[in-house]
Image 1 (cartoon, rainbow, N blue to C red):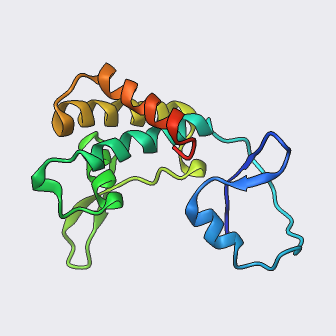
Image 2 (cartoon, one colour; image 1 turned 90 degrees about the vertical axis):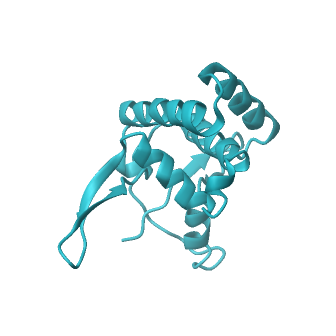
Length: 148
């Protein structure tokens, strides 16, 4: 069964939280009734700040990383931060891939640890700034553009 994540807006309407969720819901017709089970998930504000932090890293990435798209660059940062799991290729070789950060796969304490570790990687290895400067930029971006 497909899974989507929604946010309850101030006017009590539901809004999808990710582009992938919107794409999934658009497959249904307007006015169509859906039934779902729900779970309270981690703080969406922290989730938006996490992606704002990655947006800043991507927009200011060093020339060696220009070939990466946004998603693969984020995955590289997550793996560098230690957020990875082993996977076996068809040839039997073991490689590492970034773990899923879906709301349903990661609780709030785990997400906070991921956010902290990725912030450390971005500040020290990508942008060469201190982490408090990075967090200030994240808050500024999140304030200017609530999408983040």
